[in-house]
Amino acid sequence: MTHQINKDILKKFSEFFVSRFLGTGVDTAVLWVCGQYFFKGYWGQYWLSPLISFELATFVNFLTSYFWIWRSRVKEDKGKSSFSYLFVFFNVACIAGFLIKMVFLLLFESIFGFSAVICNLLALCISGIFNFILSESMIFRKKYPEPEHPLLSIEEFTNSGAFFSSSWGYLIGRFLMDATGLSRLNRLYDKVSSYRGTECAHKTLELMGCRYEIINAHKLDSLPEGAFITISNHPYGALDGLILTDMIGGRRNDYGIMVNSILARAKSMEGTFITVTPTTTEKKAADSTTLKGIRNVIIHLKQGHPLGVFPSGAVSDFILKTRSLRDREWQPSILKLIQRAAVPIVPIFFPDRNSRFFYFLGLISWKIRLLRLPQEFFNKNTKIHHVVIGETISVEEQAKYSDLSAYGKLLRESVYGKKGD
Image (cartoon, rainbow, N blue to C red; front, top):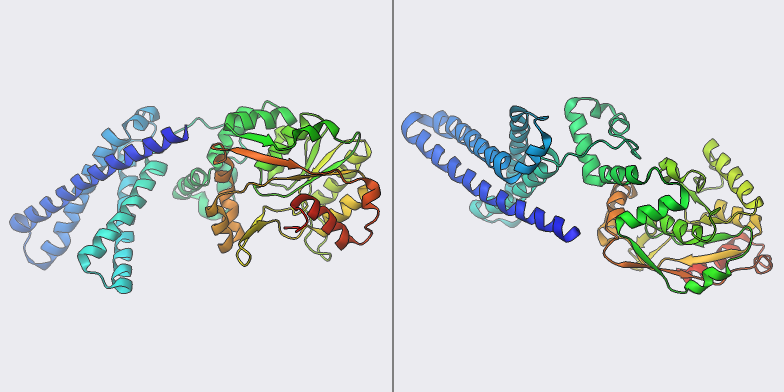
């Protein structure tokens, strides 16, 4: 499926390149004709002629895009977006592309000192890719029916700021939802929203084409009776939670997982997902949602049900200094909760990871990295993911560690190994 999508994109980009080459020819020819026969003087040759040639070339490029490259999407749209509306949108994108070309042209000239022709060609490549992305993902984007049960609707997204309240803001909001993978995530969730708990997790993995292998699957046959806690590293950010739900929930349908407020939006997982946002400092007070979640966790365990916990409370980071991937420091508030529960602990390790690009974004800002998470959710269907189940830590063994720091080290080592990272 992914191979077919990449092939389709490559075909469209090839056609886009041909159409832009044609547009460049039209631009050059019209510029010459206007300068030779219609306009004389500085303003005529250097302002009016380029403006006319640019608009005619843009119109030719729009026609090839409308009737050739994205013809199938125009047909699917069934006239919902008018010809003139799309042309205006296309024109604005071309002007933006032209401005980007000029910025990079001047940038290349100042940094590398290349000739104007070379700088122009390099800048044209960048602006061309920019225009292709806009055409593919915004102007002629593939239209899908609005999901009845979205995780995050376009209305909720655009209401997040005054900037998105205008028509253009709405379009940009739609583009951002498509670009970040939120729209695709909404469509997937809409397909599984009728399922509940473990069934929902299993169906989601099935539709994604995501497969996992348990290295020591026989340990699933010796899971503790009654209440117990699974502790895991958190390399993926969402997929690891679904795998745990499918794997442990397949044996114990009363299995629950502590999640943050973002994942709690999945109403199909109510009863399985328990919302708890860990406090990262002793001074920071827990909010009402977290306090309610903690109460639910305590009740869940007291009733003899198993619970899944990611003690880091956040996706694993790439540590530049050591060039390694690991969880941040496991949160004291979660470690205290586990320690006071006094139930057997089953360590579970995920040896796989997200893409390098995801961790690169994390070096810039965790907020930017967060926007990448939906896309990371969908790039996991090309390989088998692995899960390692560790030795169960008994209540008696845990009782030997009264100091929270030593207790946390015990738990972390049980997941990562004796190095604890």
